[in-house]
Image 1 (cartoon, rainbow, N blue to C red):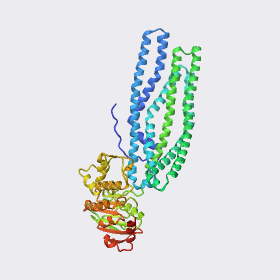
Image 2 (cartoon, rainbow, N blue to C red):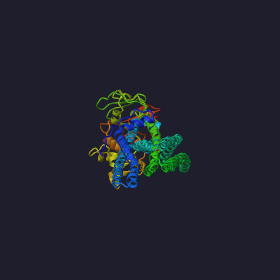
Image 3 (spheres, one colour):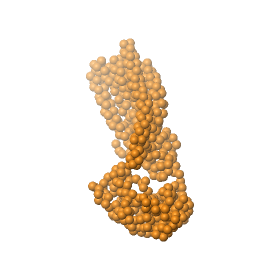
Image 4 (tube, rainbow, N blue to C red):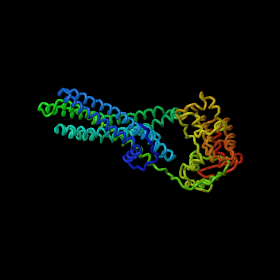
Length: 563
């Protein structure tokens, strides 16, 4: 079977979970339709086997007709081959649709997270995003995978009912009445299942959030002795999740029991009535065998119909969570004004801060919150009146801002994978040795067993805080943006290493604009100019040595000296 073409990645305009499922299915209509056709052919071929077997008994065995017996035996063989081949096609198409839907949703969620930027942290937790990208995409894939089996089950129920009606209207009527009755009974259980599954997914997301918080802040928890309290809190939340899971399992158990009991009752009714018809002479022995085969066979498509309804319900719950994430809008829309070429002046009128192009400027803030807010404004990670080359950043397409202004903080993560790829994702030739030297990171690489090919795990938790800072700096320097904004890039390294970094950073960024938010005298002394910020405003500017006597500057660097 050929490979199916990959639909383009576009963000759907979906405001409901059902519309998103329909959009997702439309992107994989070819494997879904082929899977449905293969599923119908597979189940119909399987359904015709009891009829062919009944004819073989009546014509070949009871009638003692060897050619007829061979003929109907050949028909059964052909039906078995058709069933096997179409079953393979159904599974292939179902898996294609399942994996395609899962990865397409993952692409959308990843692209949405990148589009939202800093907005995502304020409206959704890490655990919620991880839950969508792991559990929900699996449910969406399962919902599309079951379409072929569901379509085949529905069609074969109609085909079998037609065959049974033509042979015995009483038995056919039992099937036609019994199947909708069973579906109605299953539907009664699906409604509470939907609500309980939604509640369980929310509880699981909250537990995941708590687990992520604990794992990321484990060192801090150990330092303040908070492990026991967070452990108790996690156990309480875990028990709530367990209780929600038990309630869901109760409904699912009742649903599974119904999926077994109701088809069994129908089977008993069909066999009972069929046996009476044989005794009365209205059915032949072969027809009774066929009816018995139909009754046994019908349990499978009925179960698939119920399973399909269950999977669609789960998929709808998962789609609702995906849609909720995809419908989040950035706090600040992207503009349309292009930036001029060349080194440009960066100005924050609210703070009174002006960054001349090509200069190494240090900003000493009285509070860390001022530093974080100013850095976010310079990089347009929040609402801003900053201008770049006289053009307001809020009017510039976000892609241009990100390409020319890079903000690096201590909250930035090291992603899993080879360290070489992490530090140099663009695979720039001969770029890494220089930035490793500038960030004083060469000793980190030399100490690793596999060097730059060492795999990063756990967001770089195998490295110390100072090592992570230096690796983040190396990654930022390797990107070589026009404007590099660093927030406390050396707060966790020793004084000797910091002095080397300060001098090498100045050399590595020569001719490029560099803004460092710091209160370290070593880094401040290396800057061309220092801007002093108190209460969100620049109150003094000049060289580090010239500002040491300023009463507003002296307390800021004094805190650093004491620390």
